[in-house]
Length: 104
Image (cartoon, rainbow, N blue to C red):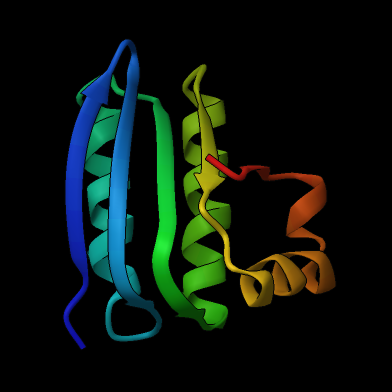
């Protein structure tokens, strides 16, 4: 599966619109992009997950790792556009308590 990532810069935030699945095959690509942005000084990242219908354990690890990386560099990682199934997954895994989620 190919992961589509479109970027937009808004104020001091990077908005990444993700298309596809975040799993064992595509997770490393998203991890690499997050690392790259933080290294370039863009430690405030928003992930738009509107077009993501599946995240496996590798994908969850990428989100947690991205959150740790951004926060350790004075930034933050937020998710928007979660489907009901992704909201439920975040709740079951406890991600909803550490990762900011917004509807828009």
